[in-house]
Image (cartoon, rainbow, N blue to C red; front, side):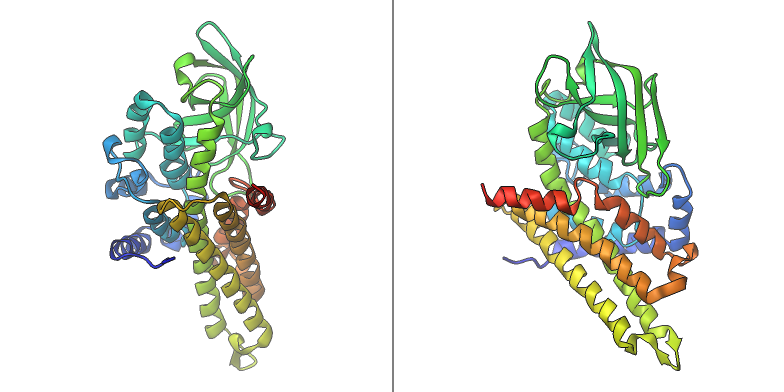
Length: 372
């Protein structure tokens, strides 16, 4: 198993790193933090022009046809900011769901627009009875002569305000299975509000007699669960790479502070307890990085097994979360000052902890995978 990057991937990493240095300054990210959508149209367009919004879209449909590892290399650098906006929710997860669930006509309709950034497509899955299993999808689509009527609430929808289209997971009347519907975010009766305390611009979406035409079904009626799971398997390691980038940035910030903060006439990095925290950060960071890139390698080389993806998600979520905790222990008071920048990572690590399943959920999935 060779987890080293190719020459092309090294070039991708350097390009993404330069992009973050130019476009992702701390001041810019703090400004995004106070906006409703969490990104700027200018940066979104630049990412589109480079081709990052369509990396996982086939060339046939206007994308780059890149490997998952290629995409992960880019998203790891975006995570160092952390750069917010619907880059992952639309450019990775949304694109993969349409690719896996849609028919040929739907792929031709949606994927070029997603790759070009003209459409921002995000998943509306979780509900008040929170969970990432099929049993957690309880919202019903009532059949009508022309399509469906939706009533209910979707919670913790990432990039809810930025989305132009929601991929809504529902139960259709009289049918078993999960159905995916492409719902216009501006449809009458649909309202969105942001949930305080989160990054990723997580929102609550309420449906009140929202009418959806029958041709909004993505794929087959009642047949959305398996393609959704296939999209999750591919998207999760890319999300983990974003968390690895965040954990790396937090570590670098903490290491530099430990070298320059003087207390009792000596850098605090010489104190054993500070060293303990930094060692813990290294352990979490390395574990997150290597489990993530092992999962990517297995997916790209057709050696896939479910346990690797679940392990990467559990370890990367814990790694980013705990890395921020240890960083705050080292930084003490300055770490909670908003302008310093650490709290952007702290909030992002909490926001992404449960996204696509928390560590406990994925540990259970590891057990199921190992038991066959």
